[in-house]
Image (cartoon, rainbow, N blue to C red):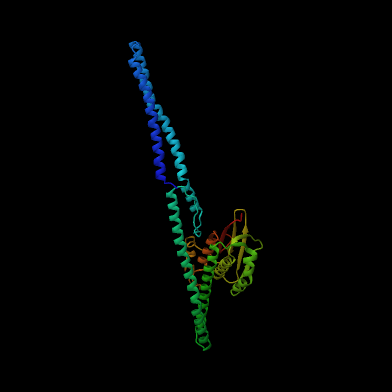
Length: 350
């Protein structure tokens, strides 16, 4: 494995040496001819002058022609050599550009120069440190969520005892504890399932059979509390991913739609498949959303309307699940009436 610097220096040195050698040989040849003419006494003055002028022209050509030839050779050889030298850098750049934000595995590259090898090693060391840092963060999130479940269960038990003793205002506290417990369970589920997905453990998921149908009864029971209905799709499509995460995504979308829609309305779940992409759409009949708020509500702890209960993590969790599946999330107001379309876009299966 050589150095780029050494290869370029050797190439330029060889080209310059060949150029100078050719010029010297040509000048040596022309000089001998001129000397022979000068010592040839059989030539007349006119013939000698004519021959000398011809030799001068040839001497000029002997300097100019090799320079032009060597310039072309230099440019051609330099282009070929430099292209070969930097080709590993182009391969490395393409490999990095094709990487998703969640792919922190080691980059393998057959480096032909020490500089490219050193860059590859440095990039892999950076990816290793980032991966270790993210793993520690995921483990911390899972540990915190796990440790919070026990004290929350104890608090809920004490609240139930206080409620039995006839103390007012306990029901609202119990509801908030239940919401917090559910949020912690979702964060724990997200942490564990995302780690599994990032390790390459993904399967072909039928959205209707594996995601929508298992949640149908639970979601119907949820929206019935507000006298709402859900219209489920008949069509389906498949993507590669994690069923636990996709169920978590759909559950959060339906909960949000129910929370922000008026009572006695219908929530529509659609599955659209075409050649370019697959779409999971949840449509509600709520107030919609301002364009300026579309990006804000996807951030953690952000809510459109603070009159509704919750911790503002629903769409943030949805956004993270879609990111893990290399999809895109869009929030668009409905054009056929009041309400919002939450569109989850996934790449079509090859």
